[in-house]
Length: 235
Image 1 (cartoon, helix red, strand yellow):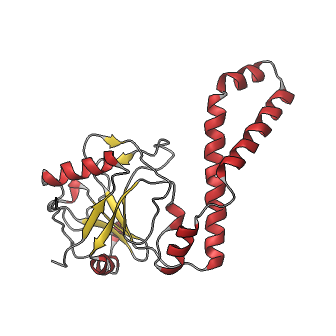
Image 2: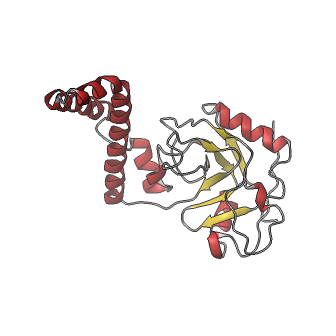
Image 3: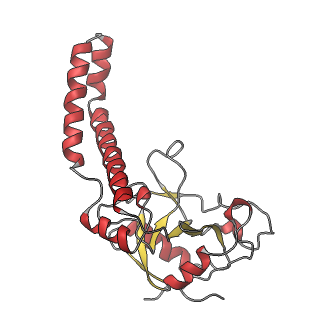
């Protein structure tokens, strides 16, 4: 046993909080592995198929027969120690629904000012695009009619209007002052912000997280030596 990791679950993400507590009380996580570990990035667990999994078995697709609605909140970001829900990629999961059980704990790295400026720019562009897509969906019937009428001028005018509105709503920067401070001193994974649900953070045991993220891994980023977990709810 490497030691204890104590996490605090956020009330801002009640669906994920309540689901994690429910599974933990049922003993769902007991005996599962940290099956995917990437140094200077994160440690991932919660796959029920990892219980007693033989060496070399590929893991990472197991879970209950449900997913959880995304609870991606402003102000919750991928600082070192953040607890977040794993999920399938956007191409098959555009709503960014979370895995019913799999989670990861962020380690990441510390970034310099130039790197953070680039992350901030990318994040703002992503935010503006997401807002634009949402606005376009609201005008879908109008857009379809303009296309039928071959009203190119009207389409361009609407597109420009929606783009300007999206740019305005996206704000001037992608990363807040708090994010910039944390990522330049404590560390994390800023490129994941706004894409995954963060539902808690490590309060004690970051040294254990560091030990796990430094462990030797093999195929599929699975640790060479199994690292089992037991999850207990502290109330």
